[in-house]
Image (cartoon, rainbow, N blue to C red):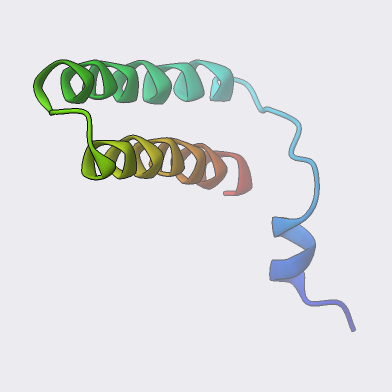
Length: 68
């Protein structure tokens, strides 16, 4: 019997009404933070990791909207 969680996590989720706007809002807020980090933090491994993790946060937040 297929695992419903795996089935859900690995399928294409057609955007439902209102979801594209939510994705954009999340990206825009994250972009504001990315610009602040870029402006205020010295270029370093730490700031690079902050950017990477911010990108991951956006990805997972949008996945949460899509999957649920």
